[in-house]
Image 1 (cartoon, rainbow, N blue to C red):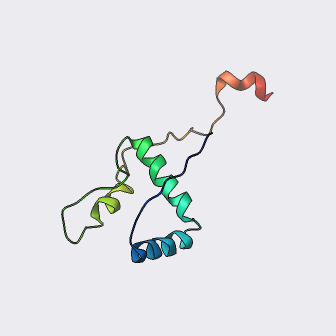
Image 2 (cartoon, rainbow, N blue to C red; image 1 turned 45 degrees about the horizontal axis):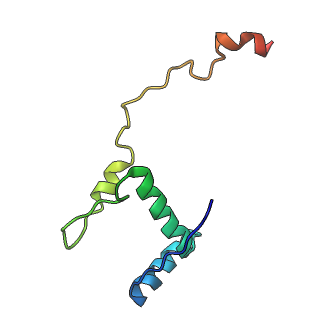
Image 3 (cartoon, rainbow, N blue to C red; image 1 turned 135 degrees about the vertical axis):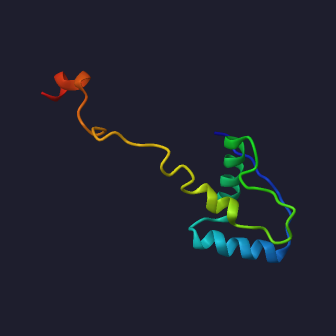
Length: 90
């Protein structure tokens, strides 16, 4: 894969705070920005909710996790061997 360079401008305080967060997650700035770009491409949209609230709520993110709880049921025999593969298992 061919790579390219991106130059961005941001204020010193924002960069410093972001680097501390990324470091706590084991990421460097380049990896974090690449994750943002890849997720944007994968979703074909921004990977976060934009809001006009002065104090953004964490609710959309909290609702995302576990929102399908109870919607899917795994069959009791999910891990049971399939008849189609009996000859390979003997």
